[in-house]
Length: 329
Image (cartoon, rainbow, N blue to C red; front, side, top):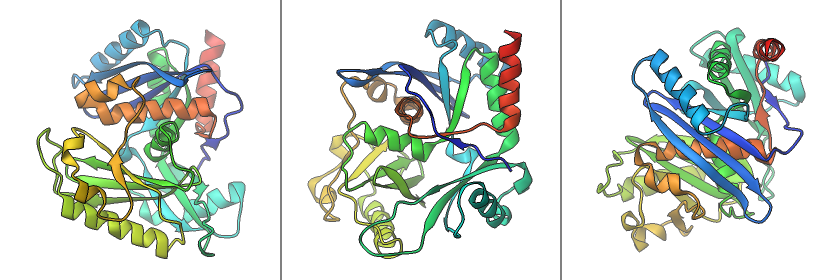
């Protein structure tokens, strides 16, 4: 096992966020602005050709035309590329905690735990009532991370960190006016949904569920089913984890627009439900329909790097590869 979490130690003016799915690549360049906070400089959705070699050439050309070569790149793993577990935490810290949690999840992984990169991050403790200490445990195949480092190096990007989608989306929430008491983000995918609970600016819980919804442009929301799943998650969040209820629930996903949310639905849980609305500069999210959710992830990955809120550290083998590459340059 290898720990892959580290604290970023400096702010940067610009960063690149990158996400790869079977359908293609999403890549975003984000910059900090003194007056505006942040700005999405550019975004592209690159549809996969089905050929690894052709995709690599296309990505290399995109990096060149977007002027991204040499910029720090923050890669966000697609949710099918890692496992996330919510578990009770033993009274340990640092590397000892990571190692202990790695062995606790070894029978839950589809590959040997020795071949994984594992890390943990604490669940924020609510003042609502005292509860057991909980942690989120992340695991991904180490070889996968090494392959990512190699592939991005070949196209001219400098891989600085690897992230997970839940934390990248947390950064998007923070930069779009998150409530200090905590909020929830419901992501609607074709056939499934996911509810992320954020408290004190940190991910407190993530829950996935099946959903009879294919995200078509004129398809109505399955309101009753969605509300039931949201309520189940909220009940567990408050009663079992002792967390305060979120101030609001925001929705994100492909082909979501205001006409799909009627007033009865938005007020059904006594917690306001609304669409995730970003700044007017978020042109990509509104216009790139096929890559809109990936655009959120890519932007969130770049924002995490800029905000220095914590990034996932590469395995030592990947760091050695980067050092060798820099030495040969």
